[in-house]
Amino acid sequence: MITRGVYSATCSILKDDYSLNVDATIDHAASTINNGLHGAIFFGSTGQSQLISTSEKKELIAKIANHKLKKKFFLGTGCNSLKETIDLIKYGFEYGFKDFLIMPPAYYKGNTDEGVFNFYSLIISKVPKIKIILYNFELLSGYKFSVEAVTKLVKAFPDNIIGCKDSTSNLFKNLKLPNFLMFPGTEKKLLSGLELGNSGIISAICNVTAPLARKVFDDFEKKKKQTQNDKLIAVREVFDGYNLISALHSYMSIKDNSFKNLLPPLALLNPTQKKELIDKLDNLKFVIKDNLAA
Image 1 (cartoon, one colour):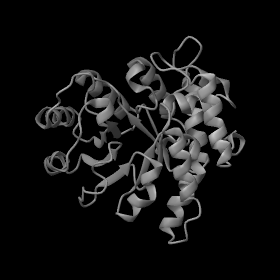
Image 2 (cartoon, helix red, strand yellow; image 1 turned 90 degrees about the horizontal axis):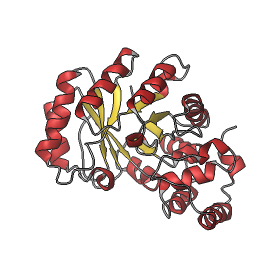
Image 3 (tube, helix red, strand yellow; image 1 turned 30 degrees about the vertical axis):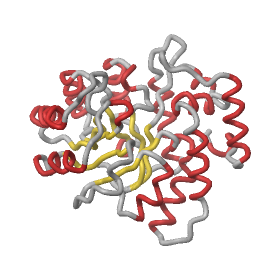
Image 4 (tube, helix red, strand yellow; image 1 turned 135 degrees about the horizontal axis):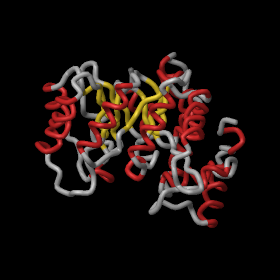
């Protein structure tokens, strides 16, 4: 079960035919855990989840079920279809996965609190033992959770709605619920969130900031002086200047060519942007050979 800590929204690696490279995707997630993360979440937005087929997701789920790091692997769904979402969750349950990061369906605008409540209610009615991390990302889903909406869901389903990834950043300061996990979606909010009683972070950039983010988390837990938080925030701010998925894959493809493929309409940074990104990170002494696992 997911607990306090620092987690990546892990990347998906594609073959040249744009199918999911299951083994490479798993190996990358494992490397970030070995580099300091408490866990990795497959098929969040960083994992191109909306663009990857259900059959490929199932192939990965079946493969990680026997991995030595299984207890540190978690799943998103990334499906607009309610039926496909429930189907994927049930498939995950067959392999022992019960914690899921779930965003309300995207594409249609005008999502309402009532409609979103019904979406999660129907999932729970079909999979009563599920544990759900709500995914609050208005930019992608077109819906922003309010304190009231989350509170209503938790009150109705206290055994199922266990936390929230707050990429919209409107909840992590204001939502105060007992035994509820709150994860801001950016390194910039890691320390300040912990000081407010948050649980850690779930972040795209933890794919490359794992040691830094873990150091900040551990020093907070041990009440030690912070030495790396400013650098962690500065690195995040560099990546924030670009599409995060494009920037991550461009950065990581320097060392590992398998990151060069992205599912359209996503694309790598152009050469000028890529050089600019690397130069900015070099100026922070954030060097690729020191920040990616072998």
